[in-house]
Image (cartoon, rainbow, N blue to C red):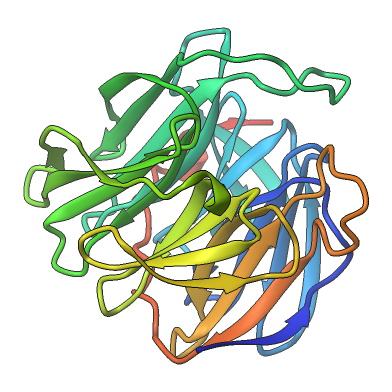
Length: 302
């Protein structure tokens, strides 16, 4: 069961990229088109807002509780949450037509990220895109590998509870893939289609993994969160009362609080579009892995 608790803050335009940090007991998410980052301290019920130096797309917890890893359009950044200071770590995708999108962290602290062709112009209008995205990993804080090219819209990045599988999606094709994952070497095998639901369920956007090995997939234009079985079949569709849920993540001390981000971008007549929603789940999510980060003092201030 999934029970609605409340909404947080004001509505966003294009909320995305949520994560849970157990060290600060906070949820983080971003609003792409307004270049904003949000921190919600769950047990203090405090919402903090940070402007970002470029459009943001994703947030990831790091090994340092005072530093948040944030993916912006042009690369990886670190934010000092106390000093509100940004530093650039590195660019990932050198193609000037592309921008970064979703990502995740494996059990070794290595970072997995995907890119896509820029789909929003500087004035906020939509752009036509092709399958120009890439799928990268950053191993041992510096080695960048490109695992796959010609991805339309890279989304979601989760691992099975036994760390044998890595899952990601191409929203342009409405497909979720899985690849054999080798944790010791942080490498993957060839991807295969894991799940492709019908058009009425929308496209897969962000996702989370629960402790039973089921994927919770936010369905863009599908008005819900799809819980998928181990074989990729739809078990349950949880309706969220708005048409474009964009991402989900589990958090809380028992990992049974589910945060859902949604989008209002280019939507009319959807009164709940852009809400940040909190739910209670009967099933716990998997703990979030923390990213390995470089020495702060050696990085370029923004």
